[in-house]
Length: 381
Length: 153
Image (cartoon, rainbow over all chains, first blue to last red; front, side, top):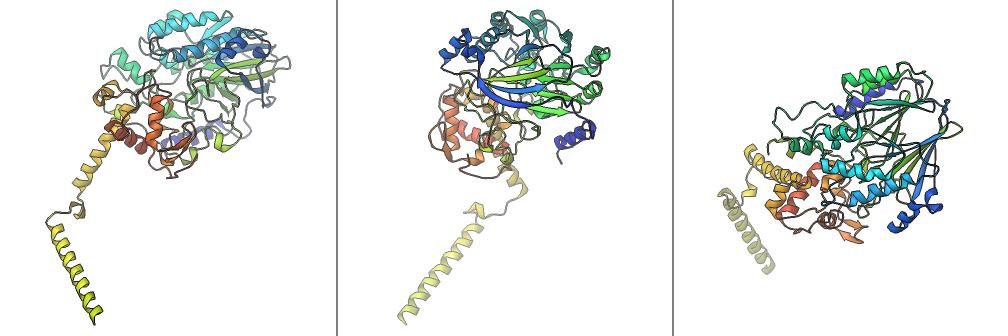
């Protein structure tokens, strides 16, 4: 049995206790319909026409067994902006997402930007993102991704977008934003890496040098414990994080390394929803009393990991590598009057979720055995 | 009788060739017939793994290695590994096959060049050149153990 399999079994044994699950008043349905903003002919519609697309929305509806008031928010993450001199493809897609969020009618209460605004943490990239985000006039909150951080260790990010973690209460929901990227074990000092070398290693998803960089760290775990201490156990909690708060696929840091401690803290709360980026793909999971929803990137889609895709995930379609707008988008989440959450995957294509194995992003995993890369382990090469 | 005579001639000639072949092998004329020592196998493996290492670097967009081969695999900042971490979702063991994006029957090398030219907006490389062979070595190595299943979509 591989180390990953051992870890996964351990997680299941620890966190999937008999009879323990997220609040069962949640129902999940999925539907596809024409995007409202297109039908109403707003600026988004015009933008979409310019791209030659009919944006279609795929929705996960959830009924939320709590006392929250209706509200709506939008999620955008993983824009991975390069300077415009290198690549405008990702800029175009980020701009499209920002315009669509701004055109939401009724407007969203706030936008959460879920990290990886930049590709290589370059202040030019972060400032570009900051300028583009001015398109969105509603309230904005931010959590960092690893691509935003490891050139200057978050200095520019914090200056432009503020520090994490943070919390606020909104219409009966406790909302928490975590930093799951800034506490990586030091892989650079002993090797005397330059800031650019440190960032380059961090920026490679399948790199082996940066190691298990995703986590909260002890100080933030204590903060999370304190942030929930006065909150009623049955009231809704939303936790935003860049990386998923459970163990999906550690070689790509599709996890936080301290998931055990995170779940120990949230376990008493019966209605916890973790919304995360980083994976660039449709994901749904339930671990203990917490459900997790993985959101799309605007930049490019990652393939599903070769193992560990949660059984509760209905996978997204295999994307067309020749179409830069395939498999990407943003998300809109609504808390409805009937205490429901609607999670709309705003993917810019007709079919979001796979209906058959041959069209599924996980369809070929049964015939795929992968090995980690080797060249970056020979430092300095 | 005449047929028997011819058979003896043919058998004799065959035996002669076998003897000559055996002697030649003993003198090293056909090296592949020699027994492989651990050192030989190690040398073979080192040749292969060096190609895997070079392919790994190219696959991850290493500028120095691209310069060494005189290739431009991308002009967008994207590297192969950004869509294919650990060469996931390439399925080299399923080529050759009809490749939908190209609308033709394609080999792995054909598809590699398509990816370089289209999504990465790079410059097509020599399908039989060193860079392509190294990329191929890396993609196959990182998918080793996967079931050979040519033609699978």
